[in-house]
Length: 335
Ligand code: NAD
Ligand code: LMR
Image (tube, rainbow, N blue to C red; front, top):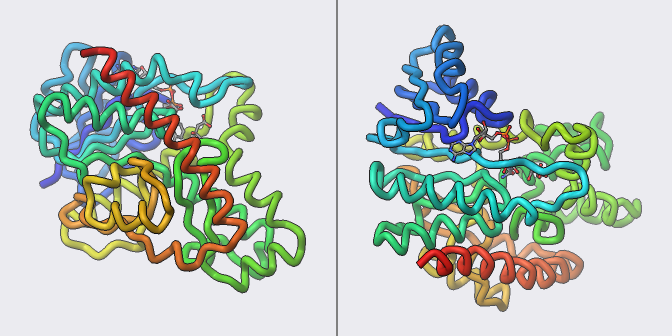
């Protein structure tokens, strides 16, 4: 029996993500919380002929939504409009994330918390520092969701190489994405040297990297002010939530997806810092889980990094460091 709570469930991501979770055999109760429309979304989904029991919770019902939750997914917050960076969302979304995780600390202190709200590079430190302040921080239970970058990296690699010969599905084992979730902190790492060579040889590597790093902008511009990626994000968020749920139910993962975590608090975290030659505290890397909790941060992928990717990692960690400091300052300013 697993209760999953979605905070921000009536939004552009929240609705399709909740539908996917309603289809998931590992979910027994699906609690949908939002400041608006949650009851309607829950009633709609409750007609779907799968077993998960679906309940909507409005503004004043957050404690009930969280009570007994084993997994909490947070896509609550404002999205970008054209011309904005993710960092422009910080002020509003940091406050929302801090308030929601503080409620998690009180009502479901052992839940796995999956943060989608942007800017992830800073909202995850906000979440962790808020929990730490409340004496409830467990590093393996807070994960920033960066799976959309992985989904894009696979799709765009297939596009670049020719989808007839290199299908999108077959790209899953050939590329991962590490670092963070904005611009140059997004670092695609091609694990298959032959494919990496092909891209470089055909002079497609720069354009490929640019597209992975700025794929979010592509969607924001195409939506013309109506928001950012929602459908692809819902699927990506579901892939990650499913990995957590599979682990809770002792099923082997499909793949080791990366997520954005607090390195010093996790086995393998210090080793990764050493391999990257940085003290940066938060970083997205493939992780191993046990019972849906991160138990090891992987660093073998660093052995496959090319000199170009290495340069990107150096840029990435510098920017990440500033993003992390910003999140930590926000929580300290509330003391
Ligand atoms: P949206 O505006 O469509 O939906 C957000 C929902 O959050 C709304 O229904 C709103 O009522 C709700 N909300 C706001 N404050 C809340 C609170 N305090 N408690 C509960 N619910 C609250 O936005 P969206 O397109 O779904 O995007 C949501 C967030 O996800 C944005 O910050 C966006 O930038 C981010 N995002 C992240 C990724 C990623 O890869 N991590 C990808 C896409 C979008
Ligand atoms: C994305 O990568 O699509 C999201 O982070 C949303 C955005 O603002 O680009």
